[in-house]
Image (cartoon, rainbow, N blue to C red; front, side, top):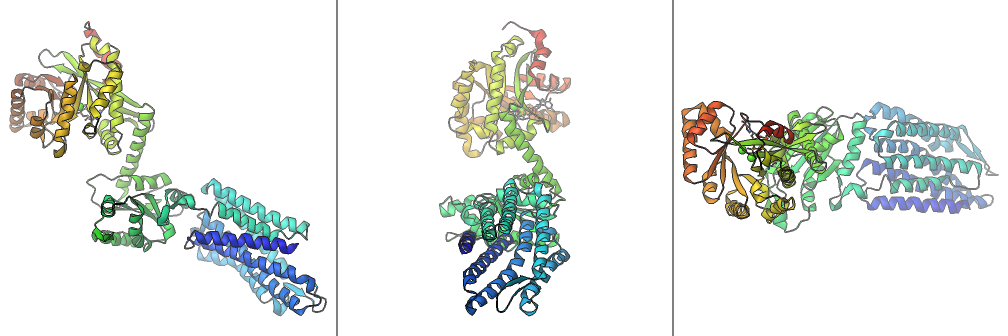
Length: 638
Ligand code: C2E
Ligand code: CA
Ligand code: CA
């Protein structure tokens, strides 16, 4: 019966080996240890099966006796090694192995080394076990007792490591390793009680199978064919290292123009990029420390490397990116941002590491190595991104209104809707910070819609009309405007709210790409034909003012505050403002000047004959209720 147990254990352990082998990741130390342990187990089962098989014949057959001797010998010699390996394994998966110094290794291995030497030399002294020559009776020596003692030591070490890293490892790993422990101990106990049930090795094999299915199952940690780990794997590994207070470096390579590969190959297969970079990256760290955190982004964990050698790796990469990469018989030039950060000096949390890999540096960023300031920029940026996303889903944007006045009678005529973001963590955020970001992450359309909804609601409340506000200006991002179906989309929002088109104006900044003039012109006409008025925002700040001015049919031009402020600073500034106003008046568009802060400015603008004024002199942008209370005395009948 014992043979059956051992054969089962053998089959299971061999299967574990085969499946680990198929994964093709035995470059990783953790896998190596796992495979060696399972291989030892498999050999042990062979030894034990041979013993079980030979015992019935031992009385008559010398061959059987020798088989038993040889099998037992290999069994003990190999078996002693499993336990320290097991500890090494748990050190690996908890990320603690890096803290194991050479001295610790030596001290740690002394017990097993002594016992193994005893086992190896047993034929000479029989201190461990002994078979009597004639009866072939088996006697245990103190060497086997020593083996049990060190087993207890290593198991205690295993348990200690597991529990002191409890928080640093994933739930799955905790469960897997606890199950492993219970299974192994249960096997030993059952075999002690029911001596004929030879389940110890079978239990071990099943325990290893459990580990294979959990810890060693990396299907969800590997980035497709490239065989490189993904962000989930990086999260686990970084979590382990950081929880163990390990200091290390993260090198991040972000390819900015991976699109060229798609163009060169005509395929969307993102693995091509990974295989192109693969050779360069593995020359820096082994494969198992390379992670692909996004299709175009790779992060490398550098453990035990000094700053100088890490920087050298960065420079080598930089040099490499100056040369072309061969891709589908053509050469492509890739541009990349390479970042290097030190943990825990620059980065202290897993989240911050992802802030680095996921963040975008400012477009004008030309430095290769990023420093602490860049990291805080990236971290802030990611926090803002999150704030914007959550702000939209959880309604944390608030719309402020800044009134506009008629220049003649200084009467309140309208108001501009301006977005604010109230984030529970970051406080109130201003558009300067979140608008450009919302444009980059593709949420500006949602934000503009949000503000438009709010403005429509405000109009429907009837309050603006009562205080003299004829219409509300809503800003639209150019990025959105030129998308197909944009005008229809915006109109549908206004119509849904049941707001008269004459009560909403749109402001668009004319910073358009030269090719998009036609598209922009169509958008403006689309709005105008539907009864909206369109304002050109920030006139005087771009370079293409005149071109867009002539090719597009705006109702009102908003002269940027810089032009007004410049007029007060120098004669030249004044000439520029005057001439611009004169030209615009001849073009038969209305003129609004923003940034009015003083009475002198008002006097100047009245003299020049502009139509509308807006600025802090009258009011800062304020929440709806403040606007109402400021102007309620006006309460004109609608
Ligand atoms: P903008 O459209 O040019 O808005 C005018 C900005 O100038 C506002 O800043 C306003 O507070 C400020 N301002 C007005 N009068 C004065 C003044 O007398 N002195 C000074 N120093 N500043 C004045 P804000 O609210 O921070 O908005 C900044 C920009 O963010 C806006 O510039 C606009 O381009 C953008 N923005 C705001 N809300 C939205 C929105 O809902 N959608 C889009 N697409 N953009 C928005
Ligand atoms: Ca505006
Ligand atoms: Ca403006």
